Length: 208
Ligand code: 5GP
Image (cartoon, rainbow, N blue to C red; front, side, top):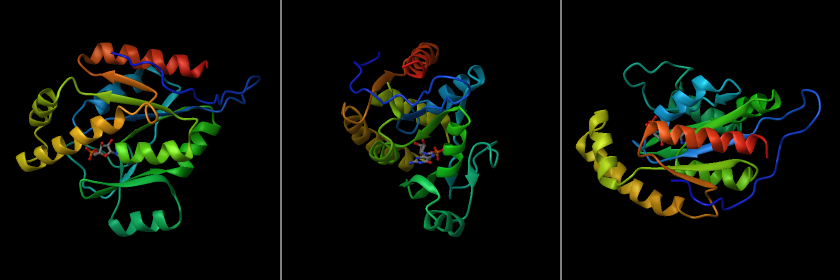
C-alpha cells in the first residue's frame, strides 16, 4: 500500500521552547479518489493539523460552507489576489481557478501548526519547486473502474464531466508515480487503512 520513501525532506522542527515551525503536507489525488473524506477524518483526530482553505472561482456544492470548505470568490477577486502575489500556488482545474493562500499557510506554520494542502497534481508540482521541504503524499484509487464508480456515486458531475475527470486522472496517475514528485503513495482501497497509513506518515515526518 505504501511505496518506498523516495526523497528526504528537510526538517523544519526547531527544538526548545515553543519555536517549532509546522510542517507542510501536500496530499494530491485525482478528483473522486476520496482525499476530502480522508482529510476530514484525520483533521478531526489531529488537533495540530490544520487544512489550508483554498480560494476558488467555482460555486459552492450542496452543503459546502464559505470560508470553511473554500473561500468562494468571483474571478475578479481571484485575479486581484493573484496580482498581489497572494497565492503560494494556483491552478486552472476543469475550467475553474483554485489557489492556496500564501499568508494563511505561513501563519499556521509559524504558530507551530502542521498544514495540510489538498490540491491537484498541477498545484503539487508547483509547490514542489518552491517548497522542497514539504511532504508529498499521493492518494491513488485502486483502479480506474473504481474511480469511475466513485465519481458516479458522488453524483455531482455529468457523464461528460466524469469522462473528462477520468482522462485527467489517467494522466495524473502516471505523473504522480514519479518518485521525484511524490514521497509517499497510498492506494485508497479502504478508508480506515488509508487513514492509519496517513497518520503514521504524518507522525513519522513530524518527528523527523
Ligand atoms: P473540487 O472542485 O472537486 O472541490 O476540487 C477540484 C480539484 O481541485 C481537486 O483535485 C482539489 O484537490 C483541487 N484543489 C482544491 N483547492 C486547490 C488549490 O488551492 N490549488 C490547486 N492546485 N488545486 C486545488
